[in-house]
Length: 207
Image (tube, rainbow, N blue to C red; front, side, top):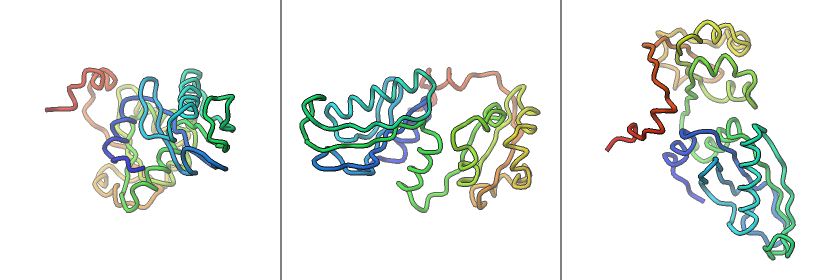
């Protein structure tokens, strides 16, 4: 299944999402292992084959989003009890689209040099994210200053643990070519605009 990079980026830019991934498929199933889809509160991207199996996965993913949970394993026999009589069995993981999504993006676009960008408020709590250390060790990370969060971010557990890998702001232009772990903190002009409000307005899409 080919999904354009721009489509994935636009999907993840619009809010929290879960990654549904087929881990194993036995017998007759809609998709083989490796099939995946992204699920947000109201949208989906990709497919694991459609039918009741996909509906179940979407419902499970949205339930996890609502609870704030990060992972669930689904083991689904495909038979009359779910209204999809393929006769096989599918095991899927449903995970928060953080480290897992990054892993998938790297597999989809080999040779692409990704940089993880986030605000200082996220760095302050980064140690609470799923797979945060793996993210730091997988791609370079750019941190943008946010009002009221510059000190807490630079004193955060993530910043302290990876302090030896921090690049000076003057070397920010080298970040995309740096071998991870590598990260940079950038002081930028402070604005009180909400990024969520900007995305909701849709004006960023241009014409």
